[in-house]
Image 1 (tube, rainbow, N blue to C red):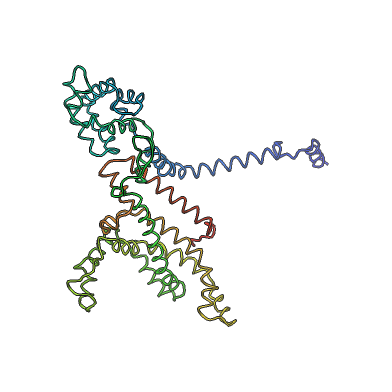
Image 2 (image 1 turned 120 degrees about the vertical axis):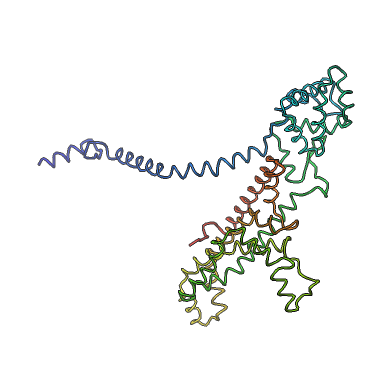
Length: 425
């Protein structure tokens, strides 16, 4: 009777309650909130790691690709004066006076080099103009400042120099993206292409995409029979073959690349063999290194395991009875493979293709060592601007364009094939 009374009391208000009297719905919400908090705490280290090592660097790269305050920070008076200049002919006397004052102060504070380098990015050959003029500007103490500066260097009478300074005086600009696309802004404010002999980056982007696609295709052609053998051979033989596939992972990248230099060079192993068997003459040795051929061969060797493993993981799950059933129903070996077996391996091909292609686009060590002039990729130019020219803004713009290109290709890939159809195992 007491239990019945308790049940009647529990349902008297029409609300289900827990043992402590809390409404069951509220108790459920508290339990779900607690589980979400626990899941968040467990994944928080990974989230922080991704933010610090992935999100923040990409954000900084995108910011640096449009932001460069070297000129306005070093020459603030000229920056303010150029903001009111219409860009026609030469600026007024007051702007030349501001330039003399800024050159003197920047020389004293040792910041003139940054401003000169920034202008030199857009107008090559002007760095010496700023550095040399800054050493002599302190001697200019009275007007006319315009004539005095032009006397130091006739380049100060070039309107193109001043219009370039007006462009770079803005902290945020799209100039580095224009340079990345082999374009520039002329004195009239129009975007025009650079002279054909000065176009560098667009051909490099095209070469990078073409060579990455070719390397991916070669890897797929070579990896398919290897993965098939791994999936059908007896265990003792497949284990030995798997060791051979994984062996490159246990060897340093520099060692593998250096080995290809020894093999492919004119006096290398491969050419010696071809000369010995009479395929080529000693004077007609093949040039297989320090060109595109060397880059393709070395990168195929390095990236081949990344195609083999996804294919093998998918092929291993395909029941052999499917092909046998097709054979028993009258299909030939080729028909059974192409219509039954091959379609089932497409998820592995899709995964390996995407993995190898993305890795190939970003490679720069191997092309730098074996590529020579014709085998360089856009990543080598990004590394050059990061380490040698120190034009980090241009390097960031190149990297941002490359990232955008990869995302567009990934979107097309998803639309045509579907990322959900990929399988890594």
